[in-house]
Length: 375
Image (cartoon, rainbow, N blue to C red):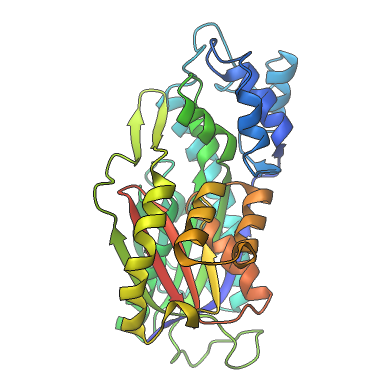
């Protein structure tokens, strides 16, 4: 049994932030002892991101640059929040207001492509690690899409950048257990809400690469008698297997904890090396379980956690840089949106008729590598 993609949609906030504007923001918001530092500019210049989309954008950014208060945003710098930024409560209030509408746009596009009547969907899986609110995004989707009140809901929370792969695993299980299942998976992240105002280097690097967005997938099993797809028969992407590997001695290398002034990320310099060392041996044991070798993989869809993550995957698997061109393109144009990002990559590969089998990879706190196999 397998989950077949019937529709996929993506969405971002309306306001892009360029790398130059990101650096300018950092000069206003970073801790007082780094605002005029000489090393902050190379962080943004070497980030690999040309633009990102953020809910903390538009009028908020103009207010910060111009010293005005038109937006009334808690993210505006004040003497009281200098070096710390808004409280976690203030940040999560923005999440409660903004996450649902962005998720709804992505889900609406996915449902439209599927051709399914929203009332025919049986399962709803939401994915997010950047905010908490209840009732939350699931209620927004039920109301906004016209889903039945009896739809079965599951939330995948706080799993970081590979969260969408975990959500797809759950969806695949539903479709396998129930041939009549029609599943909507929606991942939404507002990473900009956790913008760091202090002076720790690893967190300032995170400021330069993380962004906001949402992506959704509608899927059902191959036995769905009423499924319609715009793709020729046999070209639909099918999730046929997933895998997970906890990398040893890495718990301190990537973390995501709730602090008083936002969710605080720990991102060790050891992460690329850990991936380089451990990814290939795991895949060389996992892929043969599904009748494949590394050389038999037609396309790699890798979550672009940053340039060094992509380079580490290439080095570990012996791939040319061209193999991850789509991942780099999504990253350059959207930054690291955490969990939705891998679905942006899969969407581009799907529309470009990328060869399969395709292996999608994501990395998150633990340090854990997650994989999904598509045929």
